[in-house]
Length: 259
Image (cartoon, rainbow, N blue to C red; front, side):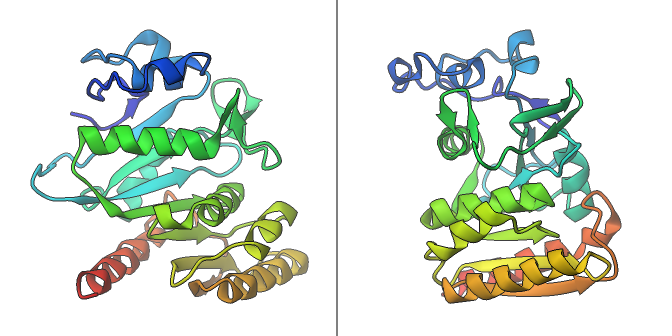
């Protein structure tokens, strides 16, 4: 019943952070205020919506891994549902975040990597609050949270992993652009033993290929263990081509279980 939810309306109440929510955007105020059982019109139409995926056969006793999805340019947070269906509709909970700059109103958005904020709220704080709320609503494993994205969204995932590596178990990076800000983030990062699945299309231009090679090297120097896959073309995150991500994630979870 929780599939395709936009906004935080299905989250339980938490009054402890209400005072600190003053001045935040509507989306964050609703995350920390008393919640209604239905998603409100204001939340659905708010400037910074999220999308939530929960398996149809949700098992309350199982601690689910969480995939946080940063969509590619020209899409929106609603891409989460098709991405989760392509990877595995049953094995994970999912959270989609809308990009912070409009391309086409209400339908297409892009990431402004130089200012990853929603009004006065940094993306890092938005993720912290939203993931905390999800963990109150659903049984999510706190040590099995993966950041994932495609294109510019993969760059945002890298930046967030570099900012708070202790929060996340790893990343899934589909054809990142590896722009300057991403490179700067990797330079200062400490990604000790972090698992990264990194894909790049062999048909990309030489500059982008070179940037990906350099970024992978920098990730290794930062302590990460990137698993690099070169594909014939850039992967479509909504296609069956990304099904292997499920097997990769499960292998990470299996290895963690024996640590």
